[in-house]
Length: 281
Image (tube, rainbow, N blue to C red; front, side):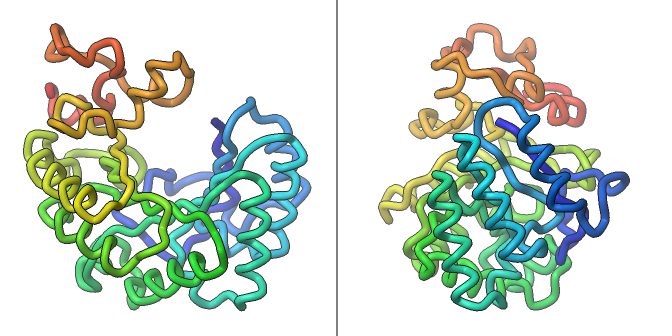
């Protein structure tokens, strides 16, 4: 897996943004530079991120996706979907076709089920309605769409409500990931990182809602020991089972509390930034 930040430019200022505020291009590098960077990356999935990648324009993104396909790679386009609400249907259809051809999907950051909470997290006024419209337009364009719901101290109590909202209002998405906040970038420190033990009961209720609605889902950055009957939804378990290398081996580490755990062979442990804040599981 390889991650490319096209630029820092973004139409949100999310409290959980893991991209460092310093460094990186503000308006974007030349297309040729992006292509060379992708060509030099290690094998695996290519994650196109930002800032906000859709601000690069449909033409540039279609060329990038064509290059990814030519290299025999798959692509993930990370977006908040705000710009998708304003793109012409023809451009969205082109993007969807290019991403589908690269065996990829749109990974949409969707942090809340209400406008007020959405604004509190993203600082994007009117973002909730534009995001909702953007996701619906992506689905209508034939795109494969994954929602990523970043779990933080601001929204973990609303996890069941968000699951119900997604199941009712975002039909056609391919799957939903509940992803615990990374304690880096703007989220460095303890303010937004709730303890796993506090998140777990709300998350399990949200997974109940998804199961009842037939909505495919998964969980990242929360160890399987906190997921109860849903432990198999932890995304690291498959990677560990198949011996895959990746960020999960660098960002996470077992702690004394992991000793004797039945998931020890299939779990890399909690995130290191989580332990820096909470000291233990």
